Image 1 (cartoon, rainbow, N blue to C red):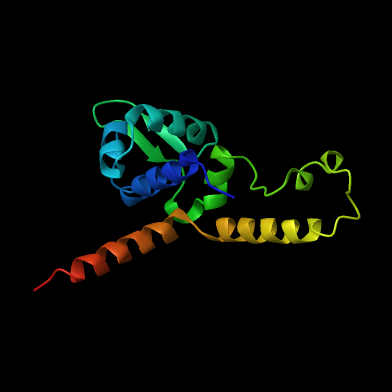
Image 2 (cartoon, rainbow, N blue to C red):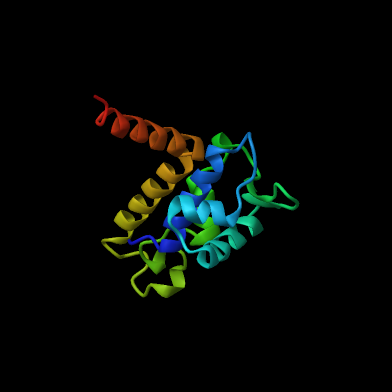
Amino acid sequence: MILSTRTRYGTRAMVELASVYADRALTVKEISEHQNLSPKYLEQILSPLKSAGLVKAVRGVHGGYTLKKSPSQTTLLEIFRALEGNPLLVECLESKESCPTDGHCPTQPLWAEIKESIEKILESTTLADLLARWRAGKQSNSDLYQI
């Protein structure tokens, strides 16, 4: 399974929004510059995140985008579903009709187990978790350059 750029970039944008959650909104330009993303593509990514109720647009001089819920209450599964749909490895897990060997396939239980593991990790990981990892990584990288 390869994640689309839409999901990877969308998650990065959400972490960027989480980093200023209590302080202010971020413009598309700010997010795109910080994350090295195309502003047009970022707009296309933010639209489904807004439709899913994960971000909101703020109008005005200090407008932009902000998270609708706190980073600790926004899971990666929510972001994934807004941008990709349900995580699937094979179609037969979503639609039994698509599989002619349903019920007697030796691999279907394995695919279902992998799907459940992926969903469990995505559901148990929040934006706050990712933000903490990101900040810890930035801190450890900056420690390497101190004299």
